[in-house]
Length: 397
Image (cartoon, rainbow, N blue to C red; front, top):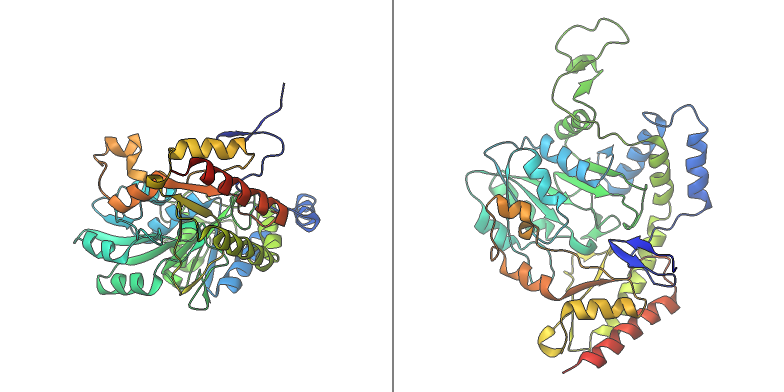
């Protein structure tokens, strides 16, 4: 029997070019091995080192390492003081966690539509969704392209809202020459294996605000402090600590932190290769009428996590599903990112209905994510391009 692996819920046969894949080298393995042989495999010095490295890279004053990107978003909402009765504006074209983190805090996600050309949340739609209950905006750097940071920051300042940037896709991206991570009130990162750098799992939040930083630290470690200046009662000794707020166990292990720190030394190399592949895809697909290419804003020097082709189904005699399945038959691994969050049954139970964000729903009909990661060879990229063009020719009306 042919042995199958599982990639994003889809069976992967040997020889398939996966849509995403981590790049772990011997230095990464050595970094993890060193920690596993040390005295600290969690709550040790490697987490501090990783936080310093991330803060230095992004230009942020503070970084807090957490167990995954979802935890990062949840901690950011906690630090923002989001709670029952509040509303938070978010994009519907994202992984569920970007909206779920709002629900975790008892608040209401309010979905603002996307720009149909860039696929990122549209600042004009953000403005339309603001009410006297709005507390924050969670803007997702979808595919790795930065959102319109200056305009969103301006809107948040006008309405006294906190700006949380979901940068799960965009580490390595620059906006107007500055690294993503120091431009919003809080920026959340993910280090899942299909992202640009990985810790297996892992996440982080960066900020320039000391007050938010203190809240993030408490949120990710049970609400417990050992700092005398934060305690309510006088310390009883060196063992003493206090829980001063509600928090969670969202800590990162030292061996994961060591892997992330090692990966960060290769981030620029990874980003360069991703940009090379994106440039080649754009060149090959730009003159094909049946394919719509994601538009990039000039401010964003994007390190892309995903490359999406959008099919113009009016010009093809197939469905998106048929094209998707045909790509797999050509040994090209692909995925769809994402189903509009409010389409999920859980959100339907909460009262959300289809039709809320017409651009997001129109985009979803035709998008397919094709392989993009640094270990793709030039031959792999050629194979992907050949398969896409072959299917376009086969299905063209």
